[in-house]
Picture 1: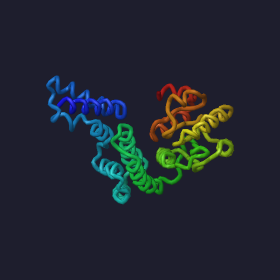
Picture 2: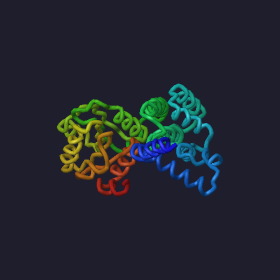
Picture 3: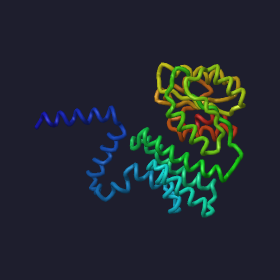
Length: 275
């Protein structure tokens, strides 16, 4: 019996180290049980994943169906539902902002709490793009919210995160120059000058290449073009060791940063407001 308790205690300590969010949820639930709360009645309502879905779910049932198809990564259904709503005369811009975007936002927020994974984000992103492309055909050319250069820094060819950022920025009305992966600082600076970009999004999954992000931000300081930094190898503490940079934890943060920078705020203001 004692041995079983020791093993259970060890598992709990491991959870605290490796899965702090899950550990905190376990402790919170234990406290609620101690207070006499019936978790069976509250789990459905209070589960973080369900709260996120409820908060982001469009009130319009037809829009909610579109959002759900994006969450499920069902590109065929998303295109079908979006096309039907466009045929009914729904405003394409409204569809992007209030039907399609809530879907991808939900998936990204679920990812933040460990309830969604990269493959699900990729499928949701494909569904999003399918719907957005239909809407853009109806919208035609629209005023850009700003111009962003997106890249993966030299030495890194992992571009999944960058591709998601590009798609979401475009869906939010930003003109994006997608440079791809393994991009040198010199190539990035040249592209920024040639396109008169407002912002750069730079990502890397590798700790051995993250120094390139720092170099890029410091060089672009004189151009007054900040760098939104993200990726598995990047964290807030690292980004705050150099200037002209704003940390983004999720793809949605890239949109928040871009909106602030393109509205005329400095990198310092954007950094302080976001974190």
